Picture 1: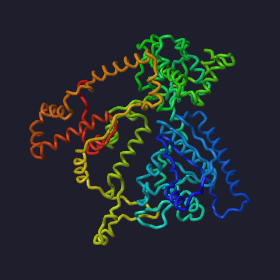
Picture 2: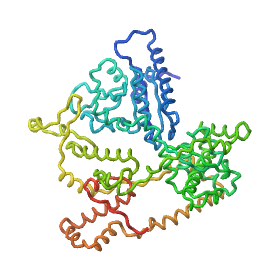
Picture 3: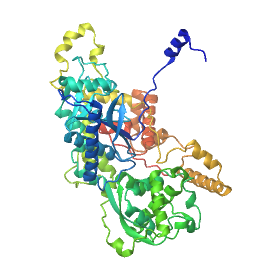
Picture 4: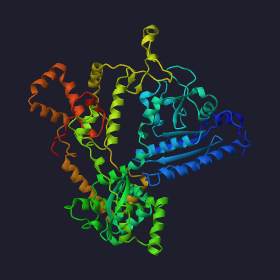
Amino acid sequence: MAPMSEEDLEWFKSTFRPIPKPELPDDCIEYSVHYIPSSPVPAVADEAADTRMRLTEVQKSAAELTKELLKDYIWQREGFRLEITKENGTSTLSGRTNFGDSVEDEWVIVYMLRELTKKHKDIWATVTDNDGQFLLAEGAGALPSWLEPEIADNRVWLHQGDLVIIKPKSDKRRVTETISLSEARKIIKGDPNRLMRSTMIQEEAFYRLRNYPKQISENLHSALVTIPRKVAFLLHQKPAYISAAVEAFYLRDPIALRPLRGKDSDDLIFKPEDFVTMSTRFTRPGYGQVKSQDFPAPKAWVNKLPPIEDRTVHDRAETGMKVSCGFEMLLTDPQNQDKALVREMKFILEDLDTGDESLPTDEEIQTWDKREDDEKWLDINFEDLDTELKGRGKSKDQSAGEFGDANAQENLQRIVAQFEKFLNDESAGFEGADFIDDYKTDSDDEDDEEGEDELDSDGEDKEASFDEEEFSKMMKEMMGMPSMSGLGGPSEPLRPRRVEELETDSEDDTEQIQLLSREMEAELKGTGVLDLNRPSEAAQGKHAVSHGGVEEETTSGLEADGGDININLVKNLLESLQGQSGTAGPTKNMLSMMNLPVPKDDRQR
């Protein structure tokens, strides 16, 4: 092969671009631990070997801390782990955890990193998720004005349990400089004056950790469930199996449901027989996923559940049926066969079949823990939620704890308070805090000099005022825009490979799918969703108003302000509220902030 000419070589160099770092997947947290010795340090013969030795010590501390604080903890998907890696010639401890729907798992990891930095003086940690520097998002109300998301990378660190932010070189309000990881390490090591520690920011950023480590155990829920003895054997061997089984149940699809379609229970791994009742630990999101789903009993489970008259016994058996079906789908679905957890469970079941292990007796099961937690945290009262969102708090005649649990109430009250504080910021725009300095003319400098927000010693903004009338007017204008809210379901979209497997189904599978489709179509027709001639939401709202005794007032409003504008406003509001399906959304939040009641959907379904 002939060598490349200089012209071809230059062209090749001009087309070369470094491979960008892949984006962090959703529901993932990424963290790293760095050894950065303070200056001056004694010279060592091999600095790289010394760094690896110190990181190995931190790795052992992390394992000890996990045993101490997370002995009985159950992760929603993946756990906290640190592995030695090398990036740009520097050794670090790195880890990535998929926490699924359990946001508390993310904060358990933040707590672990804080504790590690407290134990080791020269250890600095970073943590991000798919939203970037989420610690800054938590402390947004107390951040200095220059700290924007575009320049936040590599500036936020954990050290000695504190949140440390690397300040810019200049004191400008608008900072555009970004720093690399190597530059951040140099600043930490050689320029301590650029390291900012703020008590106010830390209180906001670490607010969710205020009850740790006590709250770690409260992230789980124990419940009594009635399940086949073989499932009880697996869960007693390793309680963490429950998370994988719940996820298999929650994200089920037609392929995963195949083994449950048959009438003969002999083909099942976990036959609906030999039932026992045991206490099972769930993650709170996992327990909510099991309890919230309507799941008709498969053919093999029909007539296996106790009568509904005894509600407690029936609920335990129904939850156990869902869990057992989750284990069945987990172990039989082809897409799970390469998972380490599935292989591990199959080895245990093989030992059971060969006689190396035996099922627990009734006497042994009686000695197991029988804990059953209160499910009150699952209950949400609409009126209480509406009161909390309005920021009014509870009245004297209302008893405490009616809305979820104490932590839910406290967190929601804090969110509303932070939102109100944000609204009190004159410089806040629809994308966040805008800085009017960039839009001022030279003639405005002198007038604005005295009234300009000053930065305190930590670089934090002072509170600004808020014009309620102007805000109310702005909200009324904004509510004319249609909502882009969408409806989502618990199941993930079928991947191409899964679709191909569906296409290769047997004739019996095809009939089952067609039957399922007809049942779904009949249910949708019953709700009126497929009725193209159904009257619009705006027309229904107009009809209700004309028969509510206020027709005259509404008509005069239409004439004064222009009929089309008001009709469109009402139509957009109702469509937006309907699209939110009772969940939080922009229209509901704006109505609540203006102290306007949210109309209930009283249509006949």
